[in-house]
Picture (cartoon, rainbow, N blue to C red):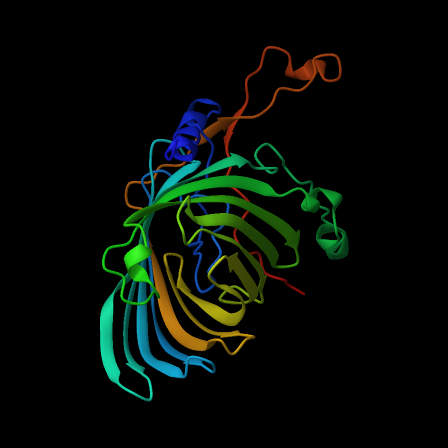
Length: 322
């Protein structure tokens, strides 16, 4: 029962033919916390990491915690273009202070290993017609943009000797995570991502959460984002707001910075940091896909002909050009 959602994801591998997930430039989940719908591409390995200064203060329990955290993610595409495995590790080192005592804490706060599979891509066979005479026509709103790409995710949380959770003795060493991911391309450089998920599934710390992220590409190098995250469980509830920017150094390298703040004082949380994303495409090969055949009645000229072409997905953050 506990592994049903993982098995269901793997079962989807037999449903569709391969098509390209790889983009010309790196497509990182950083600096936001949401997960994009698209995989990195078969045989592509991508590393995403950052260091954050963190400050936490609880007005009722009268404690403070100040220190730093390091997050490290490994993404790898395998078997099919739509599939990737993701390893997420969060480390924290801080000083915890109350009126009665203080102590230093350090250790791995959370480790999650999961699979993400792209179920539906509205642009899989779509080829947009370009108007050579009108920039405005090419960048106007299109109803198709309301149809999102959809992915599913299943993961396993590994929590051993967690020093940063109250009543950590009640925290199961192994728990589960299930997520629905959607992603819209709105044109003019806007990308909208939604994650809705259940974390620590079937445990005492089970929580229902969402993350929504709006990203805007300003030019070939710079992009910015705004993000909102909310969580609710029997033990804890909060809403966090986050913003930041990313700079594309090269097609395989990105650096970023962000700052986050919640709205409540029990506890009040603020953290900000910098990060880097890098990928290796050494073993990647372009995927050939077969275009859909036209109706013979509508176009007799295509009779008996098979057309193939290479097509890359359209999920990278496009930029607005005058």
